[in-house]
Length: 169
Image (cartoon, rainbow, N blue to C red):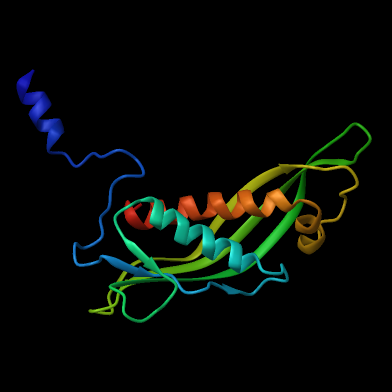
């Protein structure tokens, strides 16, 4: 029994959301404003803010909005957002919409220029209940009428991206 406990202790498991596989030299992370190649107004601001907050919440790193004077640099660009009906009422009206956001993200060690993690097409999908009167699949119209949808999307995307970077998934 003791051998099994000792074997498990050294196998590298940690609590989800608490581990980090970044080099110990990285203490300050720069997260400049993400780019935005979509027609959704200011989505990059919400996503960038949530990514910074998620990194700060991990408690191990100082996070700056700059690309200079940092040990690690996280850059990203939101490349697309699509919205499509996901389910319908008996009257053939959309009752839920699926939102798919794609982004290009890269994290590198500044001193060496080495890319530590990258995902050129990170996708995140979320479904939302329809509020009264929303029938458009235009992202600006959808987010304009569903303010909390952009918050949830940005928060969940940031949590997923930061976990992937810090936990080497």
